[in-house]
Length: 117
Image 1 (cartoon, rainbow, N blue to C red):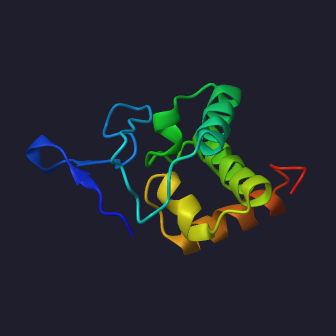
Image 2 (cartoon, rainbow, N blue to C red; image 1 turned 180 degrees about the horizontal axis):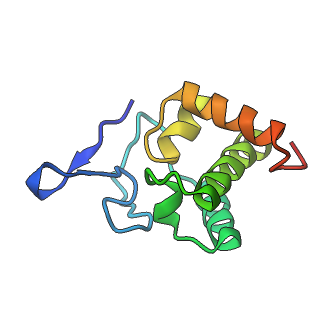
């Protein structure tokens, strides 16, 4: 799995947004062979917009209810609409473990947070 980048002072930053709160992509960016696609970015941005939060919140570590709900919905959409693996979803959502993503999707569906899934 991709390693987190380190900012000055040893503070861990997200490998996708690099602390900016938005996706920072370059031509040479490679996350274990998984290319960041416009569809993935669109899903994450749409869920952030719907929840009234920043993209950086979804791929960050916040446990605030509306953030986790948006993150769970984004994970379900990536799984259902793009047929992504749990590992790939975890990388896109802030370098989370695949088992965390599996649990998030199960929780979101059992709570009725995503009707189409």
